[in-house]
Length: 262
View 1 (cartoon, rainbow, N blue to C red):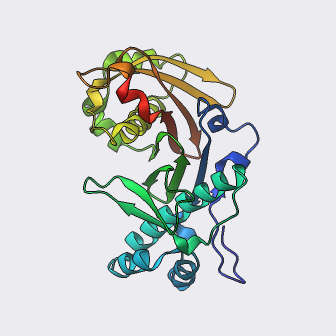
View 2: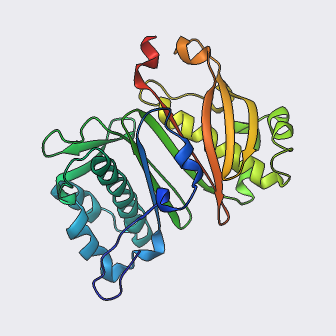
């Protein structure tokens, strides 16, 4: 949130909400999540936030963006992930590092990873997503993926790319609204694809919905992986935890990175 007095920007930790559905994720792996509205980063406080949060390498990247919206969007993603990483460190009893010592970098495929002055949190996996005015970030000690999507007609336009009639029908009992069902499927499959992108980028149609369940705080969606790779994952369901926030679908999942060796 933004303080008009100090222009100090802080993402909101999703886990601070009582009984948030993402508390149900992890399967023994610690996770943290945060989100913020891009509009909280007005141009007059963007540079101040950058000074407090970004590493020197990140400052150079931010300076290379000229479009105001892209600058806010990119910065918000870094803030969210760093807040999630710091929360994980605190849970582990590790002293909070300087935010400018943490650097969010990208590999040749665009997958984000942590750079750090020292090795304190270099083993953490991270994920970032944005849609319209919302940005979310996630950190875990296992492969992780998070995705957010505004419910709009674009989902209707591209639905044949990522879902089947059978999958939509399967979710009808837990979400009557068609856009909600499409949003849940899109974000769930994107979250899985981000998880597995450390190994390879999976196609939407390689992720088949097995079941969907509505719980008190959100949704459980279970998927089966189709394809020749990751045999350990093919033999078991991949669970995604999803929820609705405002007019956005939001989903996240965690997959142990050693599963590809099983």
